[in-house]
Figure (cartoon, helix red, strand yellow):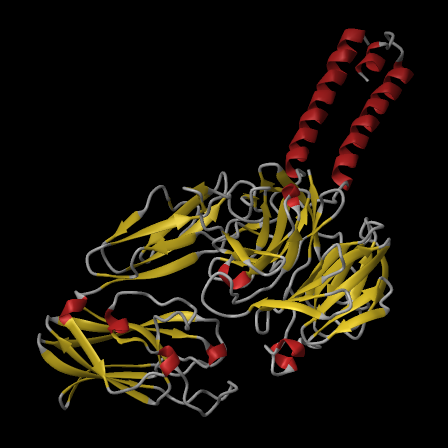
Length: 342
Length: 278
């Protein structure tokens, strides 16, 4: 055979194969969600486990520990705490005494990680080490005079300051914010129900904002109002960030951004939800699973779910590589979904 | 690869076949490596959420405007009115739609990267001028669901799925009688109610329109057989009456059916509007 003929034949078949490949590549393209600089691919299977042996009920919150492991909190008392490695492999589980396990915060205290669990049913905050050994239990703040019984206190979240002080949000109870020292002695109480921005109807989450080199402030979610409210650490109201249509859970700050699981959208209907990401000016810049963020005359246009990916996201965990983990509430035993930053 | 294929001598059949084989294997390996990396969800996996339907007035006298919204780059919104079904062949939404007659609007979202959304639907009602209707009642709504009193039933404001939104009147009695004074010719009265079985809220079973001792219109429906999701119901009772008549509308609630936790007790009636049409 002549060389030229062979080249024609093989280049023809190579081109054909190339065309077929690119056709298949379109079908195999990964879905990308989010807006602006914060876009993600979706790993639906990262957190999946054998549900017979490692079941979950509501997946409420997740944190990353100092070793890069991912720790999930669920109110399933077979295994309240589920610990994964970075790849999603199950490392260990523990916890059977947390029927109302809701809030999970991690704090590195002198080189050792501790967990703070807010339990709705026990009406308590429980501090443990990473193996589940109980270090401290903080019951309802009787000394404040604002609570006449345990059941009025249904804490949803904690945040720990660098000096060890503990802040607690009573998001399902009487809507107060408590400020304790590291031993659990009450130092201050503020918030509660009422008219006015300094009050709450659903103080679901709390974090400490230290961005921009400014003095630390508290960012507290009022989920029913679709608002984030900023307070001084002494409890003075400062400002409101309104995200209309977004029923946001706790704020999680990494670098200059605030990440918020948005459990419902629109009128708060079932099966809705997405993730909200705010920039250093607290403007919504990306909403993975939600509609395009748009501002008109300085106000955010109401946002809603755009894609049916998540069912009631309850928290966002941001790992050291800026990937996100989204545990879901009331989602028929669904495990967390991972979003890989691109 | 092309270099390998080029360096073939003429008439050397065994190595020709081998190199062609090598080319195919390399192509196959490239293809396989893209197929077996299934870590991330692919395009086409997820469904669009349905569009929002924003209506300026559900109950209108002359006209109303409907806006569809789902702010996703590349999305196409389609809609259909009346009895038409909405599909990929329906009209594309470009600007708010003016509605001048009672109708239903159905809408759906489409996008090349996502599965088609579910269909959403809203009912719109053209009514006679509410100034021509006066409604009063001796029935007392529950204090937490008293709205603005009977004014709430004539304000042309649609209540939401949240019965606590202040637009609904909530009653917990077997029979509620409304006195209606109509200043114009009318052919139908409509009750706008909601059903929320989880909150023990049911639609009426019977509605009767009386003019003095004459029954001039009636409607009846059996209780539901099983639990259904929250919904709005619009109960239309045709009747014939001349203007300026005093009419009585009797709304009758049966006891909650057997399959429900509240069986045998009186359900809640939630009503947000009464209007007439001609």
